[in-house]
Every structure is written in structure tokens, then in C-alpha cells.
Image (tube, rainbow, N blue to C red; front, side, top):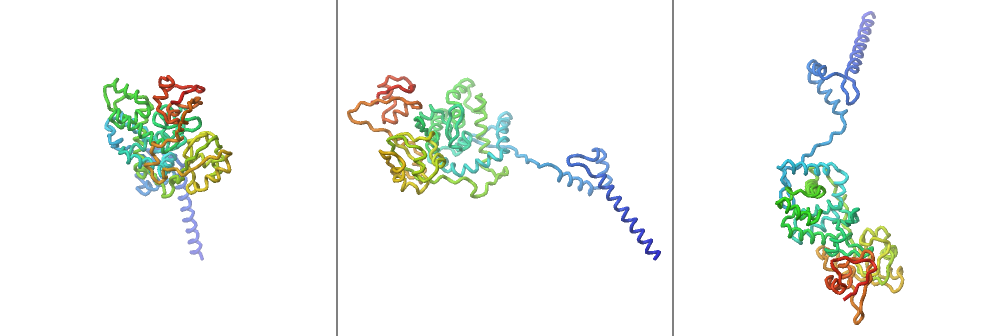
Length: 424
């Protein structure tokens, strides 16, 4: 009995000692996350005394308490644009590139949106580039211009996926008549952009200079070449926007050509699908509301505008246009349209260009609206409306712009709303 009492007392004493030591250890080693309970020198001496196990435990705790660690992605050592290597061995060029690369590689939301939109639009762009024999890298220009958004518009008047200003758009066949603007037509704007880039490449005999000129204009690039006496983009002093523009395209290429290298992994099926549409040619003798056209197609206003961004107002003007409808809805469109529009009823026919042939769909050889045919024996005049361009009017009446200038004694391309033009 006495031995049992002594044994019990000893056990209680041992338990008390263990609890004391345990509490002392907790009090000694506890510290709020992100702080240290000892000075660096004390910690160093303590580590020597307690050995590697204590150091390992402290390191593990500190790692668990640390905030999320952002991985570092160095810029690629080598990269080219349209086959021309960027001189990243030059420190100044490297830093210019690294600035754009760093901004993009850590912009997770934007990169994922690009990856999703690429699945919808890149097949169209890449197919046309192959047909033309142009460098595949030109597809990244569309991302730099608009983030692959067909409705993109800038405060300076540039519009559409390739950001054409009005004058350049007209020069390359994009009709802009009132509320109808083909700069927003993805396929036609893509065709015009490649024609423009092709012309710039012929002028400068260099794709990098052509891309720079696409941004700031050929005159500025030509002036810089004459001023600096070199034809190397990376040695020219151009506007800051243009200097960043080309480097941004290089950075976009660096990330998007190998997104998994930088932690991006878009699951299969998460990209945006290509738009499957029927195409019909619609002739309107009077304006028709977008609401009526959408109702005839069996879709809502918003979906019609998404498929047909060239119509910038709530009214589709009189004329002949190609209309895009959801796939399978063209067959009964004419009948439904007749019931929504007042007489004389517009007519709709299947578009001659099949939607399944990207090369033909991208061709600018069949612009819309359809050119008006002259009435025999009847002198023709046309009153210029707000938003009209000389090339657009010439195209509308199937006459040459030079002939239109000649009969109206016009120099250049300047016309004014309300002006009456003779149509030869």
C-alpha cells in the first residue's frame, strides 16, 4: 500500500514535469506568423545546440505560415518575329521585351481569355495566312490590336478586330456608309488587314517594319529610316506606343505558343466555339429594324447584333447586304421576314459563298452592300450623307473613284454631307 502510494506520487510528479516542459517549449517557440521569437544571432546559436531536427521543424512551420509564393518566369533567351530574330543579346532590347513579357505572363485573366478566343478566331486567321503564304506570326497582331474582340473601338476612331481607322479601311475595301461599317466584319477586316500588311512588307521588305508601320503609319517609319540611316526596327527611334507595340507582339507570341510552360492549361472544350452560321443576301427597299430582322431569324436582338456587328444602329439601311444567321435558320427566313417587314417585301436568297470554305469567305472580291446598277437613259445624282466616303459611293454605283472625281471636279477624297454628286 505504501509502495503503491509512492508509485502514484512519482507518476504524478513525472506527469507534472512533462506538462511543465511542454508548456515551456510552446511559450518559447510560439510567434505570430511572419515574425520571429528570437533574434537572428540567438536563433543561430539555438540551432547549433538543438541540432537539425529543431531547424527542420522551424523551417517547416515558417513555410506553412508564409504567404503564397509567386513563381518567377524568365523571358525566353531567343525569339523571332516572322523569322527575324529579336536581338535579346542587347541589354536595352532585352529590357524592352522583358517589360512586355512580364506584364503579360502574370496577367492570368487576360491570357486565359486570349486562349479561349483563339479557338474561335485563329482557325480563320491561320487558314488565310497559309493561303497567302504569309508568316503565321501575323496572327498575334490581332491580339495586340483588339484582344480578338470584333466590336473593339478606340477613342481615336479605330474600329474592329484589326483596328482600322476610317481612311485606311476605305482604302482597303471596307465599306463605311452611315450605320453600316465593315471594319467590324471579322472575315472582311482580316482580309483587308493582310492586304495592308502585305503592301507594307513590299514597301519595307521587312515584316517587323511592316508591323511597326501598321501601328504608326508608313510615313513615320520611312521618316525614321531616313533620319537614322538604318532599316533595322530595333535600332530605330519610333513613337513609344510603336516601340512597345512590336515588343508586346513578341511577348504575346512567347506566352501563347507554349502556355503550359508558364502555368496555363485550358481544359479541352473550354475555348469558345467557332460561330456556325448560314449566310443570306438580303435586298431591302427601305430600312428595316434589327428587331424585325432578328425576329424573322428566330433569335433575339442581342444575338443578331453579335452575328452581324457591321450594323451599328437599330436600323438596317436600304440596300443589299450579306446577313449571318444561326446555322439551319436560313430556310424559312424569307417567309418570316415578309411577315415582319412592310411592302415592298425584301427578298432573301442563299449567299453564293458557302460558309464552309474559309478562303472564299475571307475574300474581299464580293463586297457588300451590292453595287447599284444604273438605269438606262436616266441621269443620276447622289446626295452625300453623313458618314459617306468617295470610295464607298463609287463602289455603291459600280463606277471608278477616279471617274467620280473627274466628273465632279473633286481633288483628293474630300466630300461633304449634303453635296450632290453626278454619277457617270
